[in-house]
Each structure stands twice: as C-alpha cells, then as structure tokens.
Length: 135
Image (tube, rainbow, N blue to C red; front, side, top):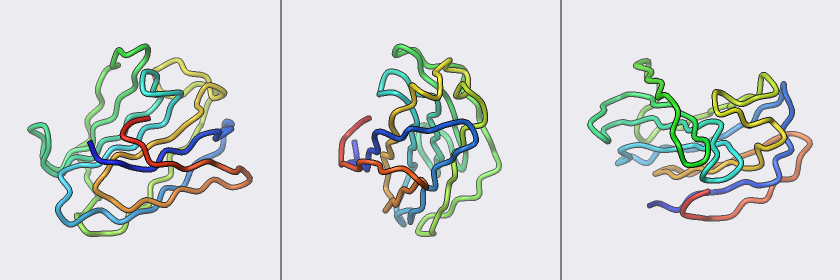
C-alpha cells in the first residue's frame, strides 16, 4: 500500500471543512481519502478510481464502523484527470459524519493513500502530518 499523509488532532466542528490539494500521478489507478477516528471507524472513505477493482472513471464513497463497511455509494460524474491538480474540500455539515454514526468530536484524523502529491490545510487548527501506510 502506498504511503501518504495522515493528519491528526483535527478538532473539526459542524460547518468546517478541510482543503486537500494535490497533483494526481500520471499513472494513478486510484486514490483514497479517509476522514475518521481510525482505520476501523471512517466517516468518509472517498475513492476515485481511474481503472481499479473493475471500475473505470468512478468515485466510490463509503463509511466504516467497527471494521464493517456501510453501503457503498457510486458516482459516475468523474472530474479527475491523471497528472492534473486537484482540490477536494470535505466538509462537516452536521454533528454526525455520513452514515457511520461517528460524532464530529470522534473524527480525529484524515489520511490519503494515493498516487498523488497532497497538501492539507484547515484554518485555525494546527494539525500533525505524518507518513503512514494506513490511518
């Protein structure tokens, strides 16, 4: 699995969002952005797929609670291009994140496992960034 940045101590509140900027690798098959408590509790698993897992130009979103995946959502509108810059702004719009049942207070981290160069920022909050194989 590729190594990517992991942000911790996010301190997110409803109405706030992260800004994730990057450049997708020219040979990328997919990339993943996770927002959650840890690798067993994800409020958002965001997985754009260029050509991976039998999917072509498809965005797969999901959540995970106690190692159990939720219902997958698939989006065919695919705005990403290999080798191109990206900007994704996951936002927190309610006290709970997607269908995982995680409260905003439990969302402590963000990770990106990707063929991409990623830069992450959140206003008014110092975040720790480290390289890890999973969240």
